[in-house]
Image (cartoon, rainbow, N blue to C red):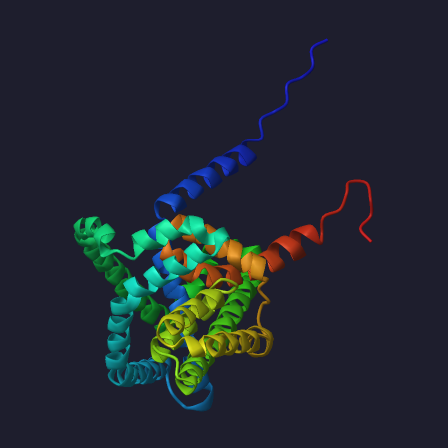
Amino acid sequence: MTRPTAAINWPALLGTVALVLLGLMAWELRWVLMVLFGAIVLAVALDVPVQLLLRRMQLGRPAALTLVLIAFGSLATVLVLLLLPEVIDQVQTLIRILPALLAYLASLSGRVPALSEFQETFRSLSSFETLQPLGSQLLGLAGGAANGTIQLLLMALLAVLLCLDPGSHTRLVLAATPRFYRQHMRRLLEDCRDALGGWLAGMTLSAAAVFLGTWAGLALIGAPLALLSGLIAGVLTFVPTVGPTVATLLPAGVALLLVPKVVLKVVLLRLLLQNLEAFVLTPLLLKRTVNLLPTVALMGQLSLGALLGLPGVLLALPFIVVTQVLLQEVLVREIMDRWTLRGRARP
């Protein structure tokens, strides 16, 4: 007696094929999706102060957004006028002393047996002759910079349009959602927006505090390149685990070359600020949003960095914030928490 053949589950098969095609399309359009996600992050960053103005003042959203853009533009202009000349001067100083710094590190590595194998590497890096072949790549770098500038401009334009009328874009997403799931989708969008907005506000304040603390502290102890080191430390606050360590290398290395007597003070200052930021400031500012594990954040940055380069590293943490909310609400609460074995009653 022949066993009957199993019927093909056409809906499941078609759904699988559709998911595969959707994944391939997303991979081909990954740069477009990156610009779109970056625009969403910027739109949420703009929407945080816009919502404050809407709650406290009798303004429409276009007027509130205009005030926010004017305030950000004015602040950026003031900071550029005040800080840019000093930053340019310190960058030129760093470029001038970089060969000597690398040569000094090469000499130190020769004194330590465990680091002797790196001596030739440091010496090769300390000579600009090895950098001459890079001159042929200047055109490629210029093209990459132009492409990045265009992407940033498109990202900023999309962010302004999204922030100007978020309701219409929300309704567009809801219209593409099955009717039975629309209320839950609306709640998911609100949760993602709240988590991302809280994370952006907290991290921005934390980065500003690290920048000011590092700048003031290094200037107070007489360390060179204090402003440049503070800017780098503030930016690298958005790169957890690795960022604070990297931000300590520049002021410590420059001080080791120019003012060796303050090296210990530089390291102690950075350790103090790093621990205050990691264990006091950031938990206090982010207590109402998602808690990112350092291992998850680092793996996310490594993964997106490998796929998208530097833009992926910069957008990794906002992406993880949104993904963590979606996983908690959809995967954990709707699938895992309701998963029961056949024949057993759910407790």
